[in-house]
Image 1 (cartoon, helix red, strand yellow):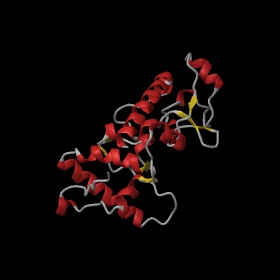
Image 2: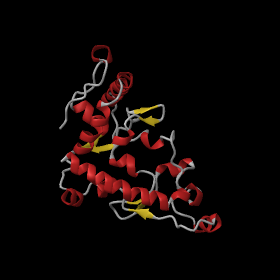
Image 3: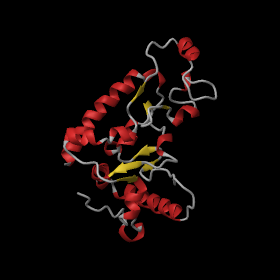
Image 4: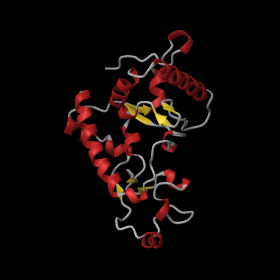
Length: 213
């Protein structure tokens, strides 16, 4: 099943690459920019975690120690959190770089584009309000594309939205097409907390990665 998911990722990456290329004049994503990895819920399905852990297993011991400490700290913060929609920085983010970039999840691959939400409305990536993606054609203080700014920009390719929201990209139709199941979905940190995969670095010197296949 995992091999079929990898085929899906290849299909998805090709689509996303073409979308990002078309929208290149509006995209500011680059190495070291990690806003999308911070203060987020980071949804992951079961099969995404299976693939993700293949990359995690290959990390060196020191990196595993750092990640184990990050997971432990986030787990403690969540335990003491009394509000809703707990948000956190991805524990695999080290020096603003993903430690398992090749194995990252779907939400990590697709973020940054204008996307069409499950309600049919166009969603703007939040980094836009930090002066990044699409900020060069966005209304001042608003969340709509400015026709005037687009005209003045001289950019030929229009800003466009795509069906790249997480719900769409994990739709059952893709399961049928590629013959695999996404399985249960929940925040990345919950996979570690609920599987009791937060190891004490002093005792195990790494994350207690379980064989999830």
